[in-house]
Image 1 (cartoon, one colour):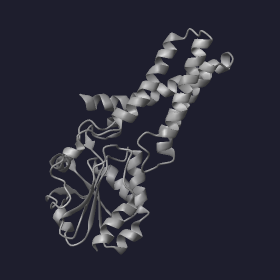
Image 2 (cartoon, rainbow, N blue to C red; image 1 turned 90 degrees about the vertical axis):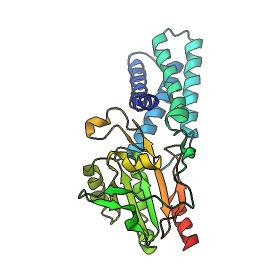
Image 3 (cartoon, rainbow, N blue to C red; image 1 turned 60 degrees about the vertical axis):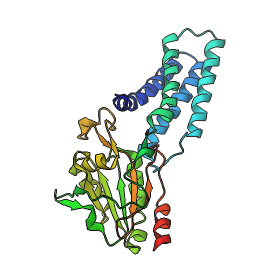
Image 4 (tube, rainbow, N blue to C red; image 1 turned 180 degrees about the vertical axis):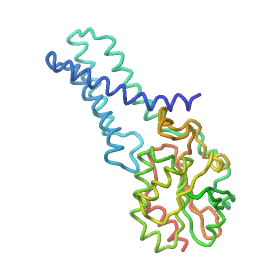
Length: 284
């Protein structure tokens, strides 16, 4: 139930910001500027800029608390609240929605962004041998994880093409192709999304990485990476499944022994490619 609430929340939250922003602009055009409307505009616009920026200027990671954005959002809130009280403004419904916006921002940082109980994973531990499992390639042929024995391998589980941070992370790794090739590393990108999306991603990047599909999240469930109802509500219309995988990076040595794992507890906080190379170079 909690995951379903999260999937609805992330689809509705930006709409609240857009609503407040345009109501403020409408009032500015009809009436005069006021501290309340200025504060409301600052807060709502900051949230719009943040979410729009994830798609327009992709970034592979952010800070956990987004301090810069939070500063503008809370400053706008207190300026708006001061103006509301000082000038005895009677827009009580509007103020309620403004409060809801601020609570939603806090919820986004401390509730939506966080994966709970990830540290409880007993299967994926450094030093353990990676269990054998199978994925599907673009031809729907079964590919065993053991087929990558003999070289260092990086298994990157990503949520889907709909996730801007996942796409930025993959773009970042693609940019390091020469470093990956030089070390003879198998780069395996895994998602539960339909084949068509993974094929489109492979064509876009034109790099000989393994773009594989974890059909029905079978492997994700075995490894404790399954994220039930993790896809934002409404994305199903585009062809994505409701369930997805939690972003995870697993690095194995030539014998499939796990030498590094990143099970981030915040979907916006992810390791940099240099971390992968340092781990492998230290053992090579």
